[in-house]
Amino acid sequence: MRPLDDITVIAPHFKRRLSGVTSTVVQLIPEQRRIGRGIVTLGPGLPDDLPKMAWNQLPALWRRPKSAKNRVWHARRNNEMLLGIILRDVLRMPLKLLFTSAAQRHHTGYTRWLISKMDAVVATSARSGSFLKVPHEVIRHGVDINRFRPGDGTTDTVEATGLPGQYLVGCFGRVRHQKGTDLFVRAMIELLPRYPEWTAVVSGRVTGENQGFADQLQADIAAAGLASRIVFLGEVDDIKPWYRRLTLYIAPSRNEGFGLTPLEAMASATASVASDAGAYAELIAEGETGKVVPANDFERLRDAIAVYLADPAEAIKAGQRGRAHVVENFALEREARALEMVYNQLLDAD
Image (cartoon, rainbow, N blue to C red):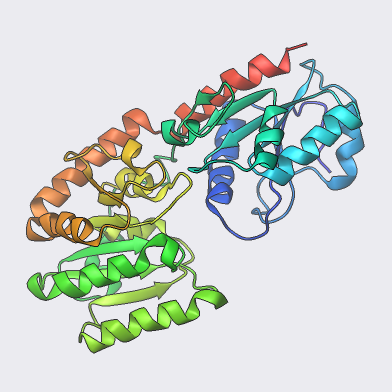
């Protein structure tokens, strides 16, 4: 077990299944450790190489860390906030509670009560902050610009995939109605016959409850005679090379928490077209790095995509501008250092 004397931040993660929160934690914690923060996770569902504390180490949190008056309990879900409240207020552990909110909806009374007990609150976007009833700071997520990078070799090309065409357009994420996978497929069925140099790829997990949804999409593709040009990849082991192979990325979600995928695409020098769900509108520079359309508006989505399919050279330029945009505004280090300022205020607070 990892000693906790030098650990000043606990980042609980109380969900086994992959989610946007999981992706955030997996990327952010190594960067936080790189800049010198003593931080560990607690809970299931995370890679083995992340620093962790064990459940039987919870009593050690009664002891203050060597370098601060308190530790920070950085929660991102209701159950994580609740345990933090119990540890601090019932068991009287020297903890300060921080909650990061990505929700784009009005909170329930229970969630508002939990949030009211936090020592500090961070919103991941201005939009998510607009639903909070407490003082908060907006710290947008970032991405690792070294892991998500432009292509630089033969494996980062369309030719390496064995798929037809000169350009790839893709949609990544769980295959389900909320993510708008059907909107993407419908747009491709309408557009690809007009643009024979393009091929579409869909990557993401299909859960049991969404198998019928995915089967219907594939049936629609087959009926349109496009089975070789709208390809379901399934859940790939490493999505990063696929971002590099794309010329255009589509994020058609009907609703979203934050939504990292357009940032991952732009960091890979890939243009993005997205709905205005989640924080997408705060990530994409309209007309420069891509386009943003109203959520669940099929016609606007299709027409925005068509602009780039008709002009691949402009899509490539938008992707290059996207890379510069992410490096300047959304590098992961920027998020980590902004959180450092919040942590430092809490660690020495009375």
